[in-house]
Amino acid sequence: MTSIVVTGGSGKAGRAVVAEFAQHGYDVVNVDVAASRDPDSPTVVADLTDLGQVYDVLHGADAVVHLAAIPAPNVLPDGETFRINTTSAYNVFAASTKLGLSKVVWASSETLIGIPFEREQPRYAPIDEEHPRLPEFHYALSKLAGEVMADQFARWSGTPFVSLRYSNVMEPHDYNRFPSFWDDPTVRAWNLWGYVDARDVAQATRLALEAETTGHEAFLVAAADTCMKQTSSELMAKVFPDVELRDGVAGHETLLSISKARGLLGYDPRFSWRDHLPT
Ligand SMILES: NC(=O)c1ccc[n+]([C@@H]2O[C@H](COP(=O)([O-])OP(=O)(O)OC[C@H]3O[C@@H](n4cnc5c(N)ncnc54)[C@H](O)[C@@H]3O)[C@@H](O)[C@H]2O)c1
Image (cartoon, rainbow, N blue to C red; front, side, top):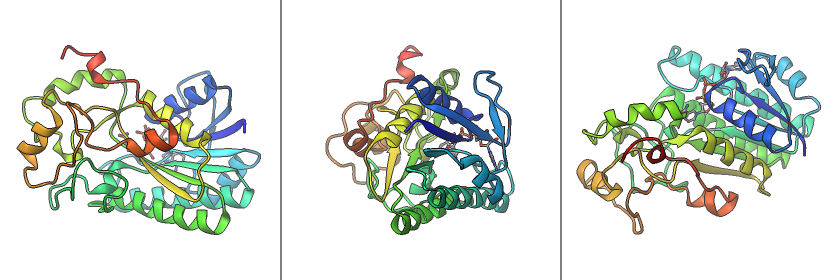
């Protein structure tokens, strides 16, 4: 497998993913509605809500990494976010299976696990892939709809699908904001103090494409630690005292479990804010 289409390759996660595949010898094509600012990563400009354009850009590719989306709530009106994300996912999934691509890896989101945990608390922590999917807003609902579509496309086509539930993606300059999180543990409780470095997103995404998976698999993708200085058990005791904290959470270990990604993909996050800021 050498020819990969990365959708959304002009964006935050996409830039790192395009670089990762290029560094590992893949022939990468970035498809995005916005041209990349990187002259080494030329863009095929296409709108993925248009099925014809999607067939055209995927024709001849071996596999697709679908990252293009409206990546958060409150960027566009809710209905537009839902329409763009679900229509793009449908179009990419439908065209990939009909064109016979060997694999579909796409960006789901941590948000579908119940973020921001205001109306309902986590059922347990660390949260893993068995935790119920409880989207609380339209963006998260668009990701759940994508995972449901992935279940069905994988079942009837035989094409392997991987949904990657990225945590909050950070580039190195974003770590400068982390000190503002530390005094009040409630500030980042909305995603159990999770984050993931864009370069680790890229690693997980490449590994997901290379792994021999079948059907539809979903993985949480987070850093190995939280964004906080307090230990993970201290944070849970302070903000979610009634939530079951399962055994084995040591020190600052992530409360968004990456055990499945470690075990099945060989994911091993290499980047932490602790290497950028004094602790
Ligand atoms: N950033 C995060 O913290 C985070 C967390 C979890 C999941 N995700 C998911 O990861 C993916 C990438 O997120 P990001 O932070 O890099 O977002 P981003 O906004 O930086 O990049 C998304 C890219 O998709 C493109 N795009 C949007 N609509 C398009 C369309 N109709 N056709 C073609 N291209 C289109 C945009 O131009 C942009 O370059 C998204 O699917 C997002 O939902 C992001």
